[in-house]
Amino acid sequence: MTPAHRSDGPVPPPGAQALYDDVVWADAVVRCADAGGTGTGAPQPLTAQPLRDRPGALLHGSCDLDTRPILSATLGVVTRIPGPVVHLDLSGVAFLDASAVAALVQANATVAGQGRRLLLHHPPYSLRKVVEMFPDECAALEVAA
Image 1 (cartoon, helix red, strand yellow):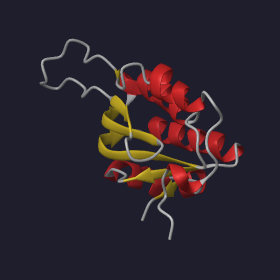
Image 2 (spheres, one colour):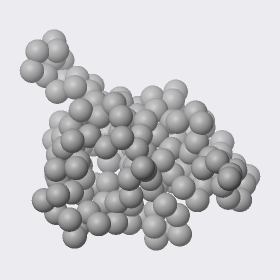
Image 3 (cartoon, helix red, strand yellow):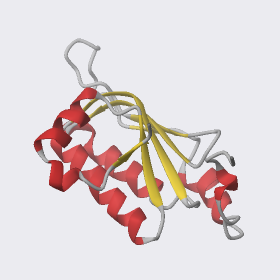
Image 4 (cartoon, one colour):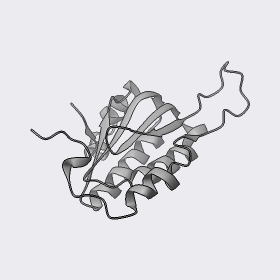
């Protein structure tokens, strides 16, 4: 059985991988500043890093009102990553609000419209709860087993 990595499909067109590696991730980390908080009650910053073993991103932090711009930018990058399957590892995400889940649904629709798949890994409890509340709206989200 073939592993679900970059070898799953055709080789990205020339320059596509360079766009992913060099320009889009700009130093391999995208950060949302912590609004000067000292760590007490301040929102946890959201960071995104490219996955090293497969096409996709690893998120850390919280996805809420304070980090919505960085989530939007990150998902914009994720939808442009070449490959038939794009992975989004949520193992470092503490919380996703309903708007963040809606953004994931939209990103999934964008990738699906390109004939590809967005595969979510390690969803936090908050994502599962939103999916339970809005099963029809979230039905297209695909979570890795």
